[in-house]
Length: 616
Image 1 (tube, rainbow, N blue to C red):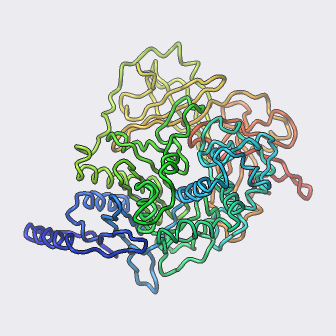
Image 2: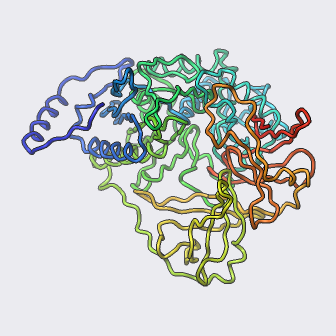
Image 3: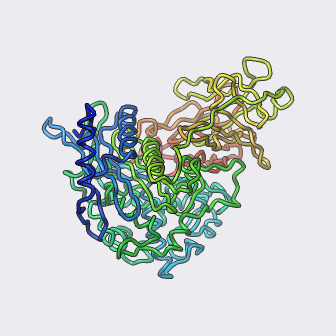
């Protein structure tokens, strides 16, 4: 295992600084493609490495991660790369992670997919605003509006597709048929909202892009990416999860001391890339240098800038969020922590069943960082480390005076609530949870509860929330987290605002559940029963909650029917017939996976279909 360097006395510190300074002035090894690299030991005296090592140590302790690796780019050089922890245990012997250890990139793989699409755009083989069906005629849905979905909408999560086909997404052996499976699943589905209406995260759009790039290039997605991006940049330690991976270089995941089976992520364009921080740093270097680095040209600068343009402007979002200012291939082009420091940065993060990754770039400063890890290490964990490293480097480069600090949350003036209480009370829901707003335990206060499906009870999320002068509800005891009820046409949304290490952020949490009529008796008879997943690949890595599907009528909330599968959300079963339809429209993350629920007659029984999954 690789431990953090600890200097025990002042004389050793001086010696280390001298040795490091001498080494820094020596010639550096050259990498393929002409990229400059600094040894992980060279920048010992950089403040960013101290901040980064502290952040990594804290993150590993908090998550139980077995390995973390990172790379920091400044200009056209890697100024710091380092790996921490254990990549595997063989014969009882731990093997230390290194800069050549590969990790799953998760949804950060979308950045590579977006670059591949822009390569085809620059060759005039496609245009961003072309309808997808023009280049991928196999794509069809039950909704005829799908023909209006453009390539840009897929890249920026504005297509209206249900979200992610989780069936066979993660397996222990490669399942190369996943993209064709997604096409078949979508053929039986509707859209959540009209194309381009709002932006909501999902993976299926990028799986369609995987098929589109392969069809337009004539090479297949993996071959095109290898030829057009990976090989020119010298990314020799980068593979897709559906391909063979070198076991000796792979960071394996552990849970409770047990080595987990290898994870194969079959959605290559959406989440299936495996790589090292050094390899991904080559990609970052290209991006922050306007598409060209040294003699390697991948994209024109205009294409890089279009990828970094906020695509969500003028779309529906009653509570805009810096966390979801989508670019093309970027989760946000207004990274909150860097914006708090006065810098415009683009970022993306990803989490799989075994890995977590985050990438941030600051194009104006030609800087970027990637952080990745295994075993309980999520994209959120990686982003927290990446923010600290990059902000400290900006201070070190004298580009900002100090690292930002989140504003102290002070409870504002409380306003009378009695008149406004009925308008906000009621049931709210997202793709993951159900919430209930009602009178608080004290006069002129509000209580917010969340439903626990495990024990079928409502649990208090926040109590004694007072309406403040700024329109947000917050308690005197915990003002760092506040809530807002925002009407938008016939809908109403519950938003949350919270304090992070460097700033305050907000995002829509759920939508108010509007009455749609009494559920059809054929559906209410199914409430309270459970179904078992029946059509998953034998090697699929299905989280335990997703193996069962349940239909619930929440206690004290009338007869609204909720489905608990991968997500947890209401469906409209009032129209009769075998379909209970999705009914929420939420910008951002809370609409990630919503699908219609169908009754499927099977051998005299009623089975249920949710997306591509069938439950018996």
